[in-house]
Image (cartoon, each protein chain N blue to C red):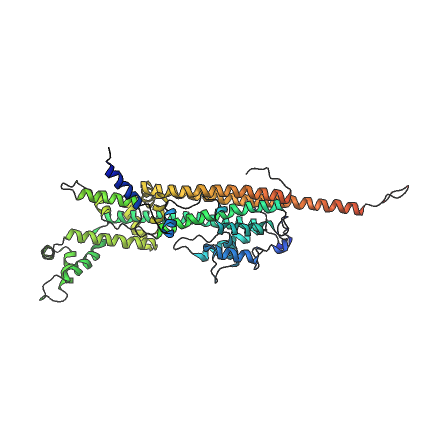
Length: 190
Length: 312
């Protein structure tokens, strides 16, 4: 059973460490779990909402009725969302490419070999493995980009799903817009 | 397939869009209003447009998303692609232009993945060739490199009372396998904890690397030599390529890149189909309008039947 003294100490410690106190600190901590924010709807981001409205006005054209404006807004929302997803993916690739040392998998393998070599009775290791373990850990050029694509496939795939959804939303929004504005309903599926 | 490009003045606007004459997309003026241009240029960091050297098309399409170029990619080549696709598709309105921005971005991505794949295969194949040459080069081919490298090492390690060209003479004599010189060199190298075999190996590796660079430049003598060496070993450059592809990590890379290129291709094709579909809708609308105009005209031109006779 936990003693009363320990309980008091735990409570006091907990009160002393309840996270950031300043507004700036709290704002920063609130973004701790944020990855790319692509699940947030475009409408919930004020800057993007303004862009959606501006693009929707252009798509609808002057003197458009309420229905046309609404359909144009759907197209604009999907387009701005698509742009956001592609930009996030591009940013991710650019940032990762700019890291000097990349490839966690290779680094882990190297560390494993080096640790084995440092044991009191090191195992016999092939020349290739030794060469690999002592090689320059930084990747460059095509190898680096290809390694990123392979090792970050999960993250990139997640972003790709957002892109696919945005593309689908935009396709149907445009078809609905065209159907409303031309009076020709598109029933053909491609 | 995409319709043949028509003069812009004949391109009718979709209802709800600005008039056709105003919808100049690939010309100097944009149908996008200046407030939208200003808004999107300032509100999106990525859409900031480089003032100079960016063509009108590229500048306008950047409103639907920035040029997503990776480090080392050529912005001018991207703009050229924009120009070519714009000229081929001749967008009729904002939505067509959105599709074009998509097509350009996706086409660029396809080219990027294809280039990357080729580059990887080529790099690995050349590395395989270098390894092959390193394994199989005859001593005659790299004895010169060996002599040079040995001279460099000996110059810093021969007694000072020796003549100036002693190191070079000794190294070349050793390279010619003269036993006295070889013994002398082994003795000197032993004193500085160096190994003759390691120097030989370094010279062979250096020569192999040099030959590969010359082979890439298609220097005829080297191409002949490399082909001869491959033939002597019962191999060909295709065998080396195949061996390279069998390398598991490369296959993983290639597979991933193929997958990415396929996704981009299918999305690009979907955008092209949507443009086709919209052109078809445009055609239908136009046909209906023409029919309505003709019907109205028939009503106006209908003459009253002449009494008791043929009106014509």
